[in-house]
Length: 479
Image (cartoon, rainbow, N blue to C red; front, top):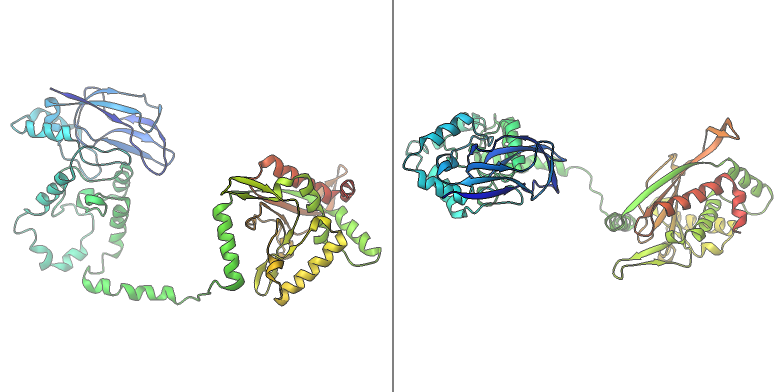
């Protein structure tokens, strides 16, 4: 009595959750063999043929061409029984496809072996895609491989050791393999079948490196790459020379990650690992800010640096958007908003990149900020910064314009939540008072931790900074 089995859309791997039916390869009533492709589907990654693990008669199909199905949805049902007994075990070629003529011939042959074939069909192919399998025991699959490789005849193993040069000269994909698989090829995924078909690799000739001899993608890729080196004899001396080939890779200069460089590497790696950052940027007309700085310095007294003015703008913006002056405590699953602004700034020194911290920047004037920036920069270049000078920051200002670049997407200084980047200020065409003019333009970028705020908050902060750069008088409302 026939048994109706349901075949569901398997997990095609690589995180794919759905696939679109492109073309059915079988009709209702068709006889299919084990591992015969029954449908062609398209995923976000590729177009693949899906083989059915059962042999029998197709009794139903689910989904028309062009329909998108989630993984695990029914594809078709197969009646496994005496009608399909002879075809259920029909061998496939290396590409996983079978011709209609061979199927019809097998179906009409019948014969005394029907009971054995029926049992094989009921067991399933034993092969696995990704996410579905059949009930074929591993012992059966191993026994098939021993039967095909062991009793190949006394003449089969003799030529291999007698003529090693011929083995080296032969391509991996041989038209007449010495001991091909006699049954279903153990392939882990239809993606592997497709790759083998496109590259012209006969899967029957491969011995997989996966569990129980399953053929993986790497086995096919290795078979494709092997003919490149087919002129070299495949002997023990070839493997002996492998370490010598690796020697040139060690002749390059190796720089230990120690000191400041090592600390920077550790902190930046941790930031990239733990912080889901995002970046937004805007161009701003800095002409009025430059004019204000010139007027301040012309009035006498200590000189005010441009960095100090930008820092004063940052402090005012953080007062409006305190979400960006915070850190995330994942252990407690809390965002900790900090009352003080300890402003870090990136400084390049002979010893590497350092980020000194200006304490209580929210209580400082532009003149005080300028003096502290000068002190910490000189200490950084002299190598006299203390650990207290380099820790405890809550927000970082990065003026990469000094390197002659316009923009950047900096890595957040862990465990802070944001960093403001400032590019170079250069003359550019700009529409000013409804007329095209040459203005001093700067690009501002904000990289922020998306856990502490969304794009609206980050955009509001950056827009306020840009407004203050374009119209410094805006700052007077918060001073």
